[in-house]
Length: 334
Image (cartoon, rainbow, N blue to C red; front, side, top):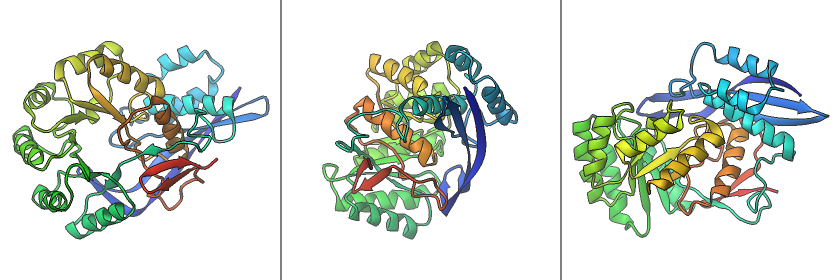
């Protein structure tokens, strides 16, 4: 077995705003494994500024993996526990090597017989830009929309009020993602304002790492709270269990590239279901390679909720896609 990788810089069609700043491009690494004339491809989707493994020796570890690609998978998993996006790329490449073509998790989805319902994502920007995106998503038939908030809450609140005036909670599910943009005191007020508008949930209202404040918010919140960034960097099952038992969130958000790939996601799902914590899966600006693998994995988990998967349409120089969006349904083009 042999392996190699190359770096790839994805370019946004339009600068994309979050409470952490504006994104112009997205760096990623493509891992290729070959054996007996077959090739498997995976994406090591590091997220600079957010990934637990955004560190100076990242490429050194990728080179190490390529040099040790024939080692036992359990050994590699332990060695890569602090590099979740590299492990994620390895998982994909091995699965693709096994199944060929653009397959990772063969199912009714990859046969083109069934689809995944996704939410429409609204990026931050001025009011006009956000409203333009919303109209586009509504026009395409989305029944669940997620808005990035936490930069200009006054304006964002008005947008949500306008939406709710036009569409009831039965007609349109609204989710918001603060990316840790509020203080605890601000969050307490915002949570009530969101409840008044029947918002489905808020992701990461305060910055990750402050379990005490998050625990207090989750215990008293009138709007369900979903942990997102809070999960990043927690690699052991005991620590994962402790987080869920301590904070008691209503939901957790699973981004495979940031939490140890499919194996890490499976572990979180198992622990969450033991404690009646809801969950859904979200992509994290992967290229179409990683996005395709995540979509195939997501389908196998059979969640009835709209998932937070991208469509690959954000970038000007993405790889060819096997995915196709029809209204709010993500299909696999067989």
